Length: 322
Image (tube, rainbow, N blue to C red; front, side, top):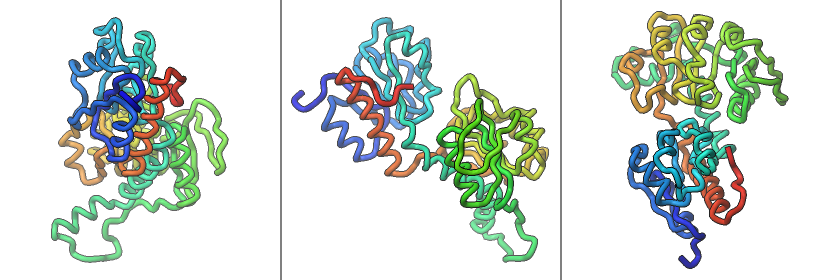
């Protein structure tokens, strides 16, 4: 195919114009036009018919899918996104298929959305915006819509990886917040930070709890009824990680009973389904998974995915194996 690297590539969603232009110039590429996740049939066909597939959130490449294609043509799933819990990476490797992701590119944008949600939930911004839009705002007064003052408060970060660290730095340097965190090992930071003994101890001690762990079996329902009941009644929870890290039913119960003061969510357990009970609550800020939603970041993610594609097609080691 002239300038094209050898091999067929499937990209599972429409991409930014910059990423699409590069992909078309460098590869024999096909783009799915749907914005919905791949169906079971599409996933099976993709493993048979393409050398590299670029899947993303919602494309559930399970062990069962790999089992359907005993001798796949595909040799790399170059995931678009840092989180890859929708792919059974062990089953992929067993089938001779490598998995890569796009770390780094997403860090700052995701941290920014965490700070957005922290401020929105603490200062009741979405609730206030709805009040103004409704036409029922009666004007300023000294006790109107009092929220949580974020500056100088204690932030608990669950998972101090790249994104958790970027959130903590913003909170400390931007808002003078005291940082404590949960991680498997001590972390070296350029700000004061205390590692908590346990998730319950962390939940008990903070004014704002932010979830920044990877998704997957190991973190499923990490934030459960026990953790929520340990939180202070004035405290807020923010989740920018994966929806299933938080037990959504337990969260709804905690909010309905006033166990915690509020929540900011960018992700949902059964995304894109958001329960009516959650949508009905005033003290809930709900964003449509905007974590990395800027043109430059989505392009950076796309270029990183294409760098992995290019390496695989040249028979080289991919730069971002998982």
